[in-house]
Length: 203
Image (tube, one colour):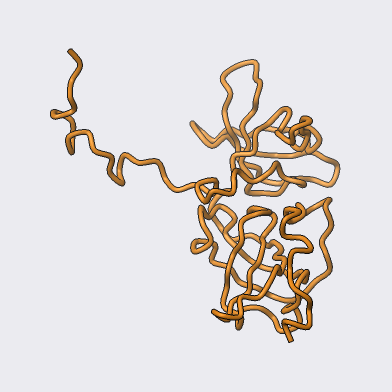
């Protein structure tokens, strides 16, 4: 007969040491989509390889489409890929040649999109599309530049895009800006675009 678990540490019960770390997809909004652009700090995993498949971290992406990276295991050997292959997706939006794993923990320059105002709690609901285009982030109203306190406003920001949930983003909102465009930043999910109240309700 198989062991009942009595001889295991903690009688086989799950603990913080044996549980997997929190991940962004755990919030119930699904995995973030494949990136629109290649940036230093992104981590990818090759779907196919001649030898053992090993994930790598992007070190830099050059204007000519060349991407330099380092393996995340072993001796961190350097490797080279192309932006075109890293960003290629299939008809379902999944990486065709590489799977996007996430971001290396650190703060990144990014963008935030204002969705609506939670007047009851004096908070603004934001979307950080590079982090997740469908995961709402609620921040105190005083954190948001006054000029961006309108639905549909874009702003520059700093955030740790590796965060598993909003409280770990270390978010700093800098200033208003134009829509960065889909060439560099994913679009907020359709359910958020146009779902906000009239601007007059904010003033």
